[in-house]
Length: 429
Ligand SMILES: O=C(O)C1=C[C@@H](OP(=O)(O)O)[C@@H](O)[C@H](O)C1
Ligand SMILES: C=C(OP(=O)(O)O)C(=O)O
Image (cartoon, rainbow, N blue to C red):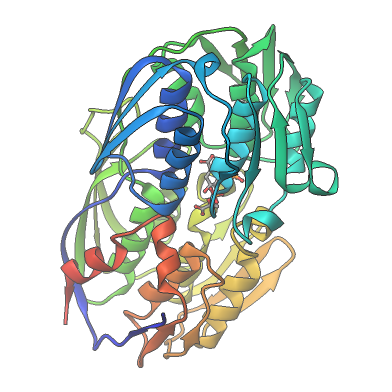
């Protein structure tokens, strides 16, 4: 059902505790299911994508109890999983689909993976190709390019793999397969992508070496159940960082924000644009860095975003584009062609929807160019079923001169189920 967002010149004030990181939440379940013993998770993100991951492992016979944001996983390790008698449904989640392929390849069960309409269009060959080189038995639509994909768990060999694309999902699928393969696997990245898998492997007791964008992992290592504290998701925080910067008379404090440096590109961009923000990174209860960020209404200037910054903010580009519409001068986003294979083609979706609001924005082959500042007006926006496009539209509505209609606000629960509740809690008027 559509949602009409009609806010009369609001300001934003208050404190928000940012909900759990989606990438770390997925991995906490996956690692807990592969490990021997009990794993307890604190701050788990109860979003549609992460619930899809839980559902897949429950179908594999892993005992998982969810009590609010606390999750308990009991497993006797990957060899104890049972063959699922149902298809594993990965919903809208690229992370679930791609990482599961790596994990299942080295298990001793046979299974079939399928996702929603968006997942069925997203490229899987980037994962199935290296996994097949490791000996994985995978059969997917169009030669392993798309789901549904059937996986027959088998004994895997190690691989020396030069990543052709900066993708943490590809890297993680290979590393998780490598854990159950024979010999040492080496993965070389062109640009450093998020390293939650590497950090969590260490946290669960594995020996992994990372140096100069080269990762080495010896196969046959056992993981041991442990306690995981999930930091808040900086990709979710990004929407409120942007809102705090562009909505007049605003000041927001965001607590519990994950500050892993492979994810903090949004902070670098806000600083380059001249935003009024401060970070206190003294909270230290997780194996991942976390802290509090304060942001105030800011005068922004355009900036250039490309190169190795892109993987550090890939999911934040929709909201950065909105920021850029309010910045003085030109913002150029380049080397971001990966946006075309996300939940939807995010270059086209961002450009189409921001244009409807009156933005001066042009799509390029590998990104977009935005000229600002431009006053924005209301319009009927399409989310394309993409949570990040939906949240970009909702934040834009805080500064539009008239109402914004979102066709499918429900898609936001893929990563941020309490987004509107949190927005209402800091919004005056
Ligand atoms: O590994 C992960 O948890 C993710 C990796 C990124 O995707 P790619 O690996 O396709 O870049 C990111 O866009 C996605 O939201 C989550
Ligand atoms: C791209 C995203 O997630 P996934 O690839 O897991 O669907 C995202 O959350 O923006």
